[in-house]
Structures are given as structure tokens and as C-alpha cells.
Image (cartoon, rainbow, N blue to C red; front, side, top):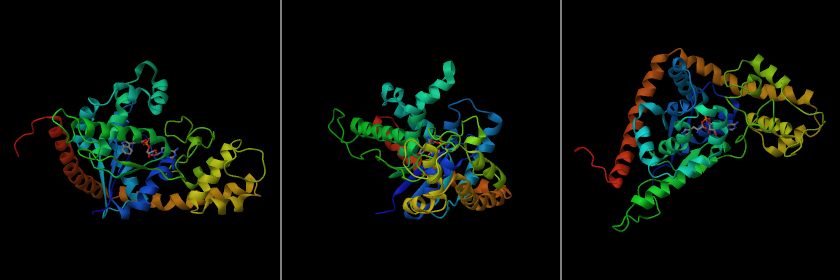
Length: 345
Ligand code: TYM
């Protein structure tokens, strides 16, 4: 048996923050040598909300460069751009035709984002999770490492795969198929406990997000040491002395301790003991130092990659070739099962 297949992706909407890194990319890097990995920059998803066309290509390349800078190893991982593989949009269309509308209408992220778009909410935003299902299912992914906020989308992906297998998989002549992996592999989510939900620095009840209008709410991967210091210095805390995890009355405390835990690679128990009697004035410099120590090497590597644009171009071209081969084979499988005629080989 070969290694398990992993697929994941990030949208090129603005730069990455600590939530994206700790919830997703760091886990991709940690586990990559045990699997065969495909990591895409999901630029088709980035246009489901209003976007700046003059920035899309640049942001897409920046995210690809950040994948490398964070430690993605090309000997076991393929990095590619979603829009360069037409099978993603094509499979999304086929999946649209088997996905009940009400499955999409109950997606939490759609409801949250739709409120912000008002009258202008696009069909694409509603369809976002079907495109995400296409991304995953095209690569026969066994595991999909993401942050906690993507759990519902992954459950939907599983439901869509099961429905395709049931409707079009090997079965009797009336089309009653099997429930297994006959056409599409049913993937498992991979959501780690620590770092799966990094909260805003200005409000411990809201998740850290690229779309928060306040830059003070997030630490970005490319923030300078001074910016990191300033953001942590000003972040929301509480007047209680002694720091603790899991007190529902102290969401900021739980979030900042959790960040420190993952950034300093310690166990929860070790951090709880170390910080049990600390005040914020003692804790904040520790968190600042841990954040800078994690991000500085990534930033240096990122600059090196940007200084050699040819390298990035070649990597993305290779990624496109490899991803296209896998994606096209799955697409053909689905089209055949659904009754389409394929062009002669
Ligand atoms: P995006 O760009 O919004 O988020 C990328 C990844 O970062 C995680 N994440 C967080 N993790 C912890 N704390 C946070 N505050 C936080 N904010 C974001 C997300 O869970 C995600 O793993 N829909 C995906 C993009 C996508 C995708 C896919 C992912 C499209 N197709 C196929 C996996 C497989 C998303 O949320 O992107």
C-alpha cells in the first residue's frame, strides 16, 4: 500500500496569519513525510467575495512562496494553483448537480459571510463548499488537514462523495450503487487540538481572521518583530493575576496561553504550570519572543524565494503537471460513471 494522500489549501486573500499557520500549514509541514501531499492555492475560492483583480496573481504567488518558506518539502509534496487545473471547476459543476441546495444553505460560513455581503451575495459564495469538495475529491485524499472552522465543509465533502458513490457507483442496473469508495474516496478531516481555533487578539470570542478590519486583531506571518511586539503589547487581556487555560470567563487568557503553547512547542500542562502565577506583564514578552522565534526564519526564507522568481515559476509549472494528471483521471472516472462520453484516447 502507498502512503496516504493529503490535500489542503489556503485562499490568496491577503497575507497569512497565525491562525492559518497554526491551524493548517504547520501541521502540513509536520506530517508531510508520512504522506503523499497536494497543497493548492485556492484562487477560485478567493473570488467568491469581492476581490481586487490587480492583486490576485501576486497574492497567489505569495501564498505559494509562503508554503515553501514554512517548510513544505517538494520531495513529498506538490504545490499548485487551483485555477490552473480546469478539472476543479468542472468537477464542481458535476457535484453541483448531485448536491441538494438545502445542504449548502445551512453552511455556517456561508451564513456568516452572506450577512456581510447583503444584496450582493454571489452564487459562488453559496457554492464555495462544493468547489472545496471538488478540490479534495479530485485527489482521492485520505486526509484533509485544516483548522476547526472547516469541519462542516469537510462533513459536506464526505456526504457529497457518499452520494455520488451511492447514485452512480457499482450496483444494480437501476443505478443503486454501493456506499463505499467506488468512485470517489471518502476523506477524513485532520484537525489537531492545539492551534485549531486561534482567536482574535482584540476579542477572545471571535476567531483570528483575514477579513477583520483591524490589523491589531491578528499577527501576520510577515509581521516585523516590532509589529508583533506592538500587537501583543496592546492585545486584550483581563485584570486577573495568574494565567489559566479553559476558564470560559477568560477567553483571551485561554487563547494567548494556547498560542504560547504551540509557538513554544510545549505541552499544555507545562505551560499551565509555568504561567500559573504570572501576570500579563511577565507573560507578554515570553509570547512575543516565541512568536518572533517562530516567524523570523520563515520570513528570511520567504525573501530568498522571492529573490528567485524563476524558481517559483518552475515549481508551479511542475505542480500543475503533476496535479493535472491526478485530477484528470478522477474527473474522467466521475464523468464515465455519470454517463458522459469521453473523447477517444
Ligand atoms: P482559508 O484561507 O480561509 O483558511 C486556510 C486554513 O487556515 C485555517 N484557519 C484557521 N485555523 C485556526 N485558527 C484560525 N483563526 C483560522 N483561520 C483560518 C482554516 O481552517 C484553513 O485550514 N475553505 C478553506 C480553503 C480550501 C480548502 C480546500 C481547504 C478550499 N479548498 C480543500 C482544504 C481542502 C479555507 O478556509 O481557507
